[in-house]
Image (cartoon, rainbow, N blue to C red; front, side, top):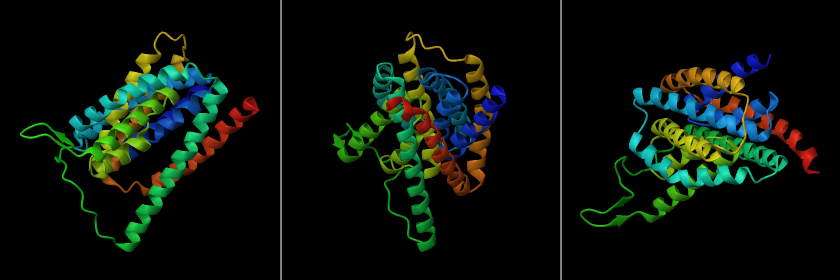
Length: 275
């Protein structure tokens, strides 16, 4: 029964990561908790699931032409510091607090996804003209032939990347719900490229956070982690192909409802221990 739940959940995680460029990783921790793992084990095991799945999804998205590798690596490199800090901080926080923080974050994710969906529907209904955006090759900082800095964009990238890294290290999630809009707004990537490129970022931050947790003495059930990872990888490949061919609006709406449900479950688990 445990393995069956891990397989089903892994497929959902992979589909969301591949199709939406993030969000699915937020399910890995609650699933591992439901399978009997402690919060520390769940957040550590989640990093493996998220990192490997994002890597597979990034490879598939790269083949589909929706990944800007250099920008993804640069954003991920900036986020490493936050990932390491978050991983170290998680070991010093009581497990009930960790669970409560995770539940609160899930509510924020669901809220952000709902706002995004409403805005998308409003734009479609109003037939609004597209907003002028910088070109894909428009640099943020250049040193030659003269120094130039688009400092507001650079600051936005720095802050967002650091927050993404902190969330990844602290809670064992990928932070794709922040990476995708950041790549869209700060780096002017079209949504198709932002979703694919975010998988590169998530792979880097997950690996950094997992390395920072090594030697902390937290050992998850690798059998469950492997089952989640294998099915999530298969789902991410399918999700990346789905994103290139279909409208993912309905999938995003359904996923938002699922996130709200899981957030309530995690809150029920955390609140009694905090009182």
